[in-house]
Image (tube, rainbow, N blue to C red):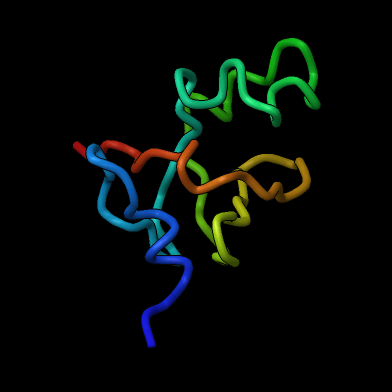
Length: 88
């Protein structure tokens, strides 16, 4: 049976490669703006979530647990609102 976390991350015509545990990511400003999660969060999220990198610690369904290299709690975000952190 297919992994549901991979299927959730790879739907749609412009789907990105599925994100896996250990991947470096950042929050996509365009995907987050106007979302239900944005409405339930601070009016202006901290800049580090958009700058990255955060490490994807776990994937459960359509959500991923992100650890930031800062003294802040880990957060759960929708995988379709994350993008791979550019390397080099």
